[in-house]
Length: 633
Image (cartoon, rainbow, N blue to C red; front, side):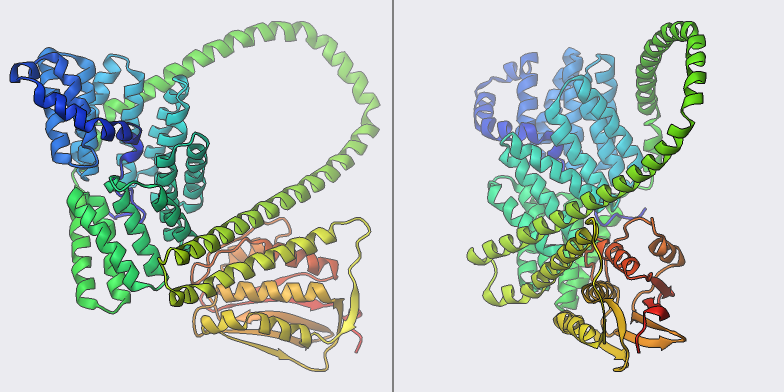
């Protein structure tokens, strides 16, 4: 059974954290009450609630104590045959086993809890139980089943009008499932919704937790500057007694610093995380942190320690998955059937109501049908010309809708880039002011910030020129010129970035070539194509801006020795109505996909079009022709 790189990590606070703050505050008073009771009183049914409250109060501090109180409560609940308490106790034990990474045992207890909750028709209990079953399936990478369980929980939460559970608890789990399924964009959107809702209700704890997960998603997407900014914001909000969260957050810090090349800081945070995870015996977190430490020691060339942590990573990975889980999953059949029956019953009620409404409408429609047909005939005879005019109007409206949709998408993407850039920049300035990073480390990071700023600047330039081209009466300013000056400007613009990536960027163009073209459009086209080539060319590669005679035309292009492009993707790029394309580069560089949209638009305005020649693994050549009737030699 493979282990997901972005696994659930056993974090269960999103199910029980709404009780955690209360439990933490009342633990002392609960223990005081417990110690004041006699042995006889502790065997009374009234003590069951006390045992279960004590269990919850120790969730994140000491699972042994939490488990002890849960079993005491379960034993009494079974003795006095109190179904609600039996279900609660089984659920609490399931929580603890989940946190420890004992998923088979956890599932057994949740199945028992679910059975009792359904017998007593406790919707809130069912909602919380199916939620955790979704989490267990997410651990086992059965993402479709996990999301189906969450949908069931969402429906029940909607019936209970529980806005908090929907926006915080269930959204956490949905975001984590997206993360395990490597759908990082969807995960980030979901965690951002959680953060925004937590801020709205002034819940600093869940704001911190959401930011913590946003930092982890950023780490997995290799958006490390953004991730560190989120992690730093999260750390400010957490209290020191939130051990579970701090252990996870320190792991995120370790991974982010390792990705940025700061091995010493990565190791400091990694061992802080490891100390907490050892104390909690959280298997998923131990799996994760040993992997991060192994990678950090490997990057620092401390190979014996790297091997040590890789071995521990393998050991935890092997123990986390019980290959007999399929037998246990089979036992879910009864629960799944109940869920399906519940859904079918719900749909049956809706269908019966719909059918009743339809019968009334059928009678009405039958009476009015003849009149409708007569009216339709009259309208048809008089509408043929209107139909033609409407078709033209629809076409114009469709084109306008497409333009508005593209404009909105471009603004949204650039706005997102601006937020990320300012978040990263602000976060790092704050880290520097707090002396979390030294001046030398900040100088080491600054080139990455510079690349972010350059990407946003290029996007703004694309947006400005694109918007300008949409104005009524716009006309491109074509003049006759030699393009070598523009080629040289682009090479100079990207010289720092290509130097850091060890890529050779050069020009191969005759000095006697002259073209008739809009100068600003040519510069932006070449900038976009070079920027794209840098993303997909690995270290030691080569990029060439060229211009040469090709029969009676001039061919201008940007050729690289990068990763190349599949035939399917080439066709999508060349398709005039193709989707916006954005893929991570060789260093997981981000992109918006707007560069190619703008490039194709500017080429069309100048009487040309984009062409692509590529083979996967052998680089790509993006080029266009300046038509012979535009040449003035």
